[in-house]
Length: 73
Image 1 (spheres, rainbow, N blue to C red):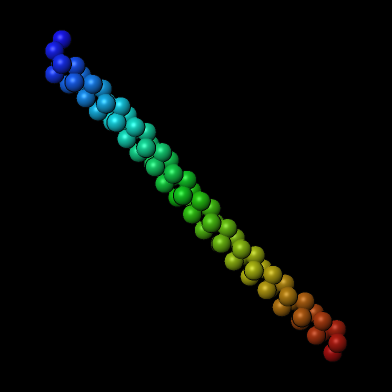
Image 2 (cartoon, rainbow, N blue to C red):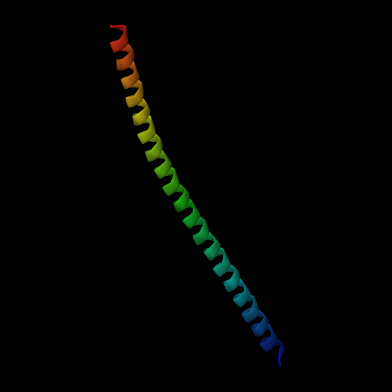
């Protein structure tokens, strides 16, 4: 096997290794993007639930104030 053939085989091996590393990095990035999307969805859900809880608390405070006002009258 000539020196040129050996060099071509080494280059092909290096390109294959580079391709594999790029595939791994892309897979990691996709996984990371999925995790970020899931975290955003959880944050939106938590925000909605917190808003609903705040409204419930506000209603309860309003009712308590009305009850206290009615007893004082």
